[in-house]
Amino acid sequence: MQSELDSYDRRILALLQEDASLSSAQIAEQVGLSQSPCWRRIQRMKEEGIIRGQVTLLDRKKIGLNTQIFAEIKLNAHGRSNFTEFTEAIRGFPEVLECYVLMGAVDFMLRIVAADIEAYERFFFEKLSLVPGIQEVNSIVALSEIKSTTSLPVLR
Image (cartoon, rainbow, N blue to C red; front, side):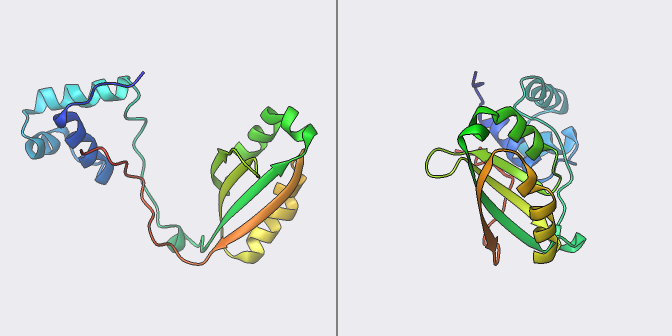
């Protein structure tokens, strides 16, 4: 169920998406509320699952993950019947940052990070290609990143 968000809620969310370390007092000041109502709004949005968590975002290149790969996965008929087995295997690979079920010519799209092409090759042969049910993997190496954000467009 989608919650009704007013303009205060949306501004609070926009600020938190940019800097989750802001205190409720700092947020309240920027959105024009007093601290207590602002804090209650944040708590309500946490309880409702609108705010799923607070994390620290890392620069993947500065920690040695220089290569980003998008892998299109097609399952064989047996693999489709073992959807749960496939998804659990993928969830267990820390190199896979995102996995989406698709409609169309391929079944899944993965976003994978690795130190370099050789590291991805090891991941592919030692982990990904061993997952039961995979018929085909098409790996696409990203050359550069034009836009990458975790911020949703909450302001209207």
